[in-house]
Image (tube, rainbow, N blue to C red):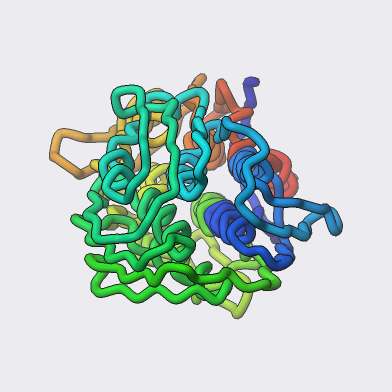
Length: 415
């Protein structure tokens, strides 16, 4: 689907979808609880639907309470031998360890760009924990057969924290205690979200500097009511729209959140935007913007939003952490360079792990999303400052995380 976005100003209030990162973690924890769990404020983007399919396949009984609430009674009792994770990297690395608790072989399959994203970080640690693993040279599909036991195991955390999240939620149900040694942990705020989710279900995990986690085995996940907070990754796009083209208030978000992408507010302030934090909302208004420096190593999902911010700022912005972008829905560093180049914005990737963007006039162009939801949203936000219409090919990719993004952007456009 092509989507054409005209330039213009925005002003208004929006509520982004719920955090799909929290939603998937909560769905996984609900599966592992044999007591009823109620999840509220859910919105069913593609990734959340993939996680919901996984928990049903693995034995959860799910009832719809209302449009945004589910009642879930967990219990690992697989109804099938195949987990379809769609294009969700988190669902893959989250539910593979959970499936490894089961005594039956379970095959994890995906589609699209997920098929070229590496899964090697999962294979050897699972084998060391007693799991029989058959893989496709480090890529999906992967077949696992447990039960996974505890023990002492080392995990490489340099590519992603998602597999560590899967282990942290699965291993409390293992028969023995586990000491998890993590090398080069990245995206540590996402591990904080995992620990927070586990704690809400009554599970105890201790950790030291994100390098060592102690996970007692034979734990029970307690019944809980869990209201999913707003998604800061989605909010970041809306707040950048406010900073570059008017004023936006985003509801159901808090700076006290453990989500990594609250860091967008730091970048906005450094760029010169006006930022007002309230208890459950954030307002950002346009001011003259200038180049900024920002390290996105621990919040790589912010890169597309930061690119739109930097393109609208005067001077050069320096963003660190591009090494985290290779294995996303696309190689986001290369995609930003290519697509913002079409908009007339210079993006320099010559220095290792660094992106430099020279802000300036944004031109009308035909662009591509590269099948990446965050690229589609980024280009739409950049279009607000363009000298003409920007057309985005593959705009339907926003359904992965924010299905109503274009409708919401249109709602706050000033006539």
